[in-house]
Length: 207
Image (cartoon, rainbow, N blue to C red; front, side, top):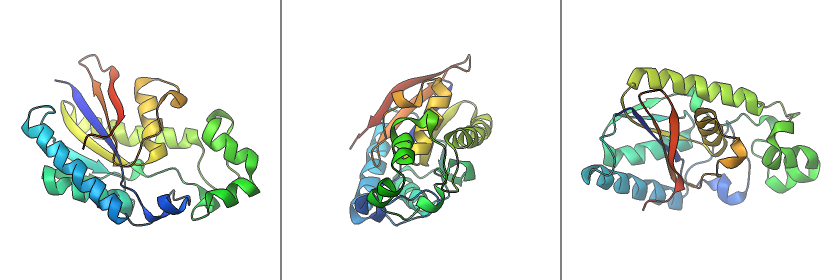
């Protein structure tokens, strides 16, 4: 069977709506975000029942409250083991966290452009992590989880940037080729018996 991995971005949050950076800080799910998480959990439970996906062995979530909240809503329907994995935290964005997008762009236009469109040249002067540091961190956490599960099916609840860089690392594709995950979108990759990861689908809304 190999390892089956489903990635879920947390549900919509207050700061998502307000266009503010979150990173290691947090804002709660909106009512829409809660609805999204419940709809996804219900849809995934139905997919398991219909044998469209295998039984889920565990949910691994970022320690951010918005991710945990999303994971708990999923698990109301999936009823499996839920673990917190510190390495699945979002990129640390330093003093950008809590600030509005427009204010950051006005203050640091070059850094803001590189952050979104030219990650290879992004050098944070905000006290946050580099993308390379993020990539190594999330991969370290993933490899530990994958060693524990080996052959099975897991759900990882994480964040917009963390998910992109982890999938990029696993399938050895440039991160710019990995689509920006929407709230409560589902992405699926699998590892075969040779240890090679491949994408099944990315960024899909299944409810």
